[in-house]
Amino acid sequence: MPKGYWVSVYPTITEPERLEVYNGLAGLAVKAAGGRTLARGGGRVVAHEAGIAERVVLIEFDSFEQAVAAYESAAYRKALAALPDGFERDFRIIEGLD
Image 1 (tube, rainbow, N blue to C red):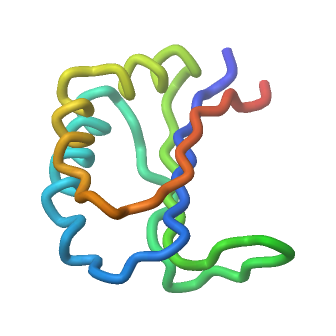
Image 2 (image 1 turned 135 degrees about the vertical axis):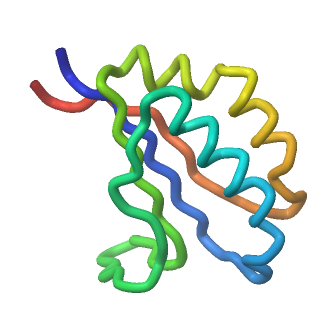
């Protein structure tokens, strides 16, 4: 069964400290849903073409369905409610290859 992934990119973050509450709640929700954070940050990123080097997060789940269910969970909805106004992000759930 192919794995599922959350891919999140934040084009700009001017006040990263405002993400602390969201990050804590999101981390708990991901862990409770069986997700594993594979990459997070913007420290060492080489962006090409229209790539964004600010902040990229990659989270792996055992299946695509598990990734979708984690996003739809009450715990993650609580985290989303804590995401500060004014933050732009590109969030996707994708299915991995076999």
